[in-house]
Image (cartoon, rainbow, N blue to C red; front, top):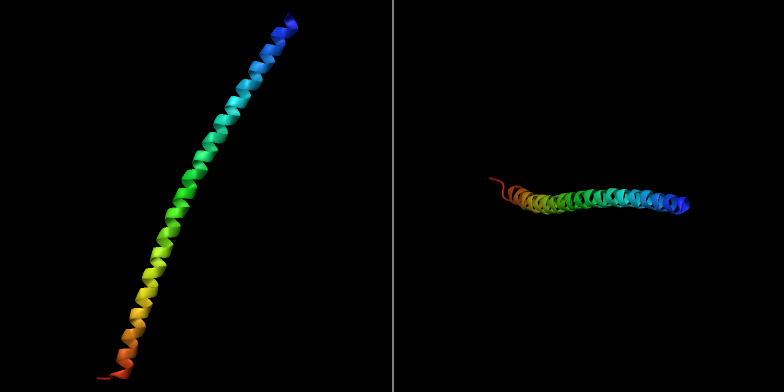
Length: 72
């Protein structure tokens, strides 16, 4: 009878530990998902900025070409 109670108590402690570990892992996953979402947002912004800069570069080259070929 005593062994059974000890075994049940040990099992209960293990279950509590597993539950705590699971909670910690769920929190870590949630944190990593938030970080990933932030990184993806930043990546989209960087790509958007790069496209804008490329368009600006093209427009500046065209302007320079016009100025060089049509001196006033």
